[in-house]
Image (tube, rainbow, N blue to C red; front, side, top):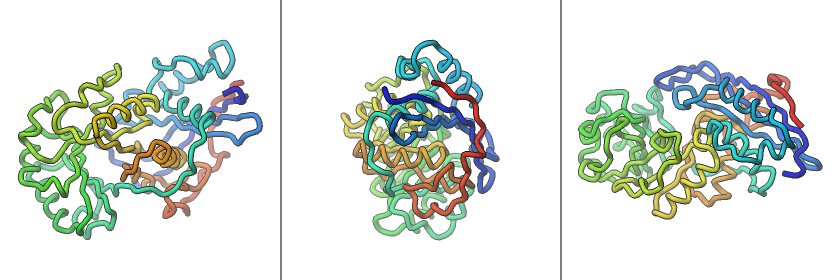
Length: 334
């Protein structure tokens, strides 16, 4: 931290290959903030602040104001960034924590790692030949439960031996809906169902509903207070799907440690961040010893890579680049 001498704040806008339907909102571009950390005698470090509309409680303007107010405080730059930041939005905390981590901790290079192939609600592969990936994530919950069940059964029939399926209901089902979709389904073929139940419903009856485990994602962020580790003892819970951008890096590490202590699977999941953060997630998965497959199959919806090609997903390295000249400068602090 002592070598940090200048911080630049930029705003970026990345094109999409098609409008991104997130349920409550549809995006026609991906926007975010980018922190450029300049250090004496070392390459600069980049970190991102990208709230996801419809999933983040704070919008981009709120995050920008919160960060700029923090940077205008008196004292050294190191003190302004290195103090207690718990009052900041999670996405701002992530941007600061990710920059500090890269400045102070040797991380492995970004390399390809197992990813779970995402089948969104509008993906043609939901009804065509199954993707060849070892792990496939199927979005469910927008159709009627019986329709979801038929889609699930048809996909399971197309999967090859060894392929595993994850479901994501985005908190859309009642307990009876879950029973309708999952009754009789083989838990050896379905790894888990992510966020099956509507907000406020009790997960205690889950073991009587299905032998397929459930996973938590949004549930971990419903309160401003840290998620209680004791809740991870809920019967039927099999995995935590952690979105560091929406959770903050320090809180992600706390939840990861609590999950590992209980033998729960830990999966890093993207929130449609740029290639810079997807590469950082690949580096963190190596650094933390998380084997995956991880939920990082989101880059293909972006029409551009930010500043440099993506290193952790070689099949996307020919993406057009958004150069630094296209960024909007929002200030420099020393």
